[in-house]
Amino acid sequence: MKAIDYLERIKKLDAEIEENRLEVERLKVMAKKTTASFGDERVQSSGSQQKMADKVVDYSDLERKIEEDTNKLMECRNEARELVKKACDANCMKLISFRYFGMVIDGNVKYLSWKEISTEMKFTEQWVSVGLHKKALKQVQKALDERDGDQDGRGNNQCKTGEAD
Image (cartoon, rainbow, N blue to C red; front, side, top):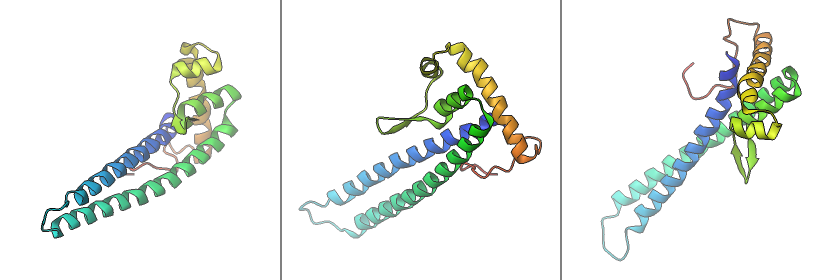
C-alpha cells in the first residue's frame, strides 16, 4: 500500500462517519414529520406508522454503523500514529498529524490545509506541501514496506474503508 493511501483512508473514513451522522439527523427529522402530520384530522394511520417505523430502523442501522466505523477509525488512527511515531522525524510527524490525523477545533476534527500547516510550522507553504510532505511520505512508505515485508506495496492493511478488497 502506498503511504499516501494509507494516510488518506483515515480522512476518508472520518468523512464517511460525518456523512452518516448527517443522514441520521435527516432521517430523524423525516420520522418526526411523518408523525407530526396526524393533527386533529382523522386519517388512516397504519401507512404513516409504518413509514415512521421504517425511518427509525434506518437511522438505528446507521447509528450502529457509525459506532462500528468510529471504533474502526480509532483503531486505524492509533495504528497509523504508532507507525508514524516510529518512522518519522519531528517535523514530518507534525505535518502528518496536521494533514491526515486532524486537530480538534471547537469540538470538531479539522484537517489543516497546506497554508494552515505552513503557518503553524513557520515554513513556506511550498516547502511544506512539496518538500516536507514528500520526505514524510518516504519515511512512512519505508516503515510500511518494512512492516509488511514489502509485498510489492500491497501490505496487510487491517484498517480498510468501505471499499471492496
